[in-house]
Image (cartoon, rainbow, N blue to C red; front, side):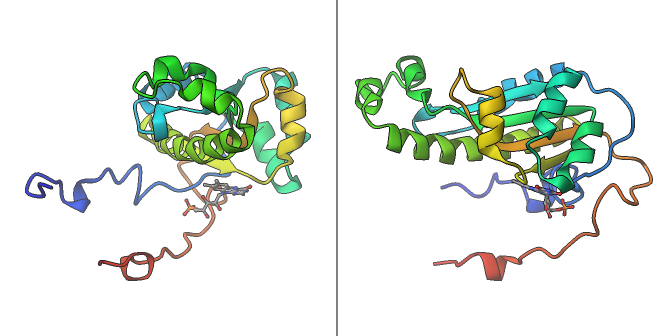
Length: 203
Ligand SMILES: Cc1cc2nc3c(=O)[nH]c(=O)nc-3n(C[C@H](O)[C@H](O)[C@H](O)COP(=O)(O)O)c2cc1C
């Protein structure tokens, strides 16, 4: 592997990594939901196993949909989700295999094989959907938004509320918008991060 052309770590975008903070409060300024399409259209190029791309998104626009969603959020996540300019439910599709003829033409017969193995499909779709969720969060940051991802919720309740027909399964709810310039209260105090020596072994 060539290493001479790799950028120094310092060249990684600070606004996406080092300086970005999870946001719990947003300024009262609308965010065009079209940004979700733009971010998705970039994120879909990032890798997934078998190129399966099981991530599915529900963009919450109407007040009615927001209230139905918030009823299934944990208490501490309700007020901020009601107030967020933009909220997206990130889910995975256990029936992702139906697209494999297009997404993985190099894997002849994969669709037919996976059809009979719903347990494997669910676990595979969840793993790869979570990988795509990470890309999506960083993509929103890259689009200049502040992001508040949440898993404090009744996921099965959201599935019944929003995905009874599609069969998608909720992984997280993601609020996005712009944090107040005066960040007090918008973000929690920065907590520690694990250093490389703790999080990695060099073999
Ligand atoms: C997948 C995921 C789920 C999270 N769930 C919640 C949640 O339910 N409620 C909440 O207030 N924060 C939630 N958070 C926010 C994390 O606690 C926060 O991102 C982390 O502590 C880092 O904070 P910082 O970006 O301010 O340093 C979640 C974050 C992620 C990525």
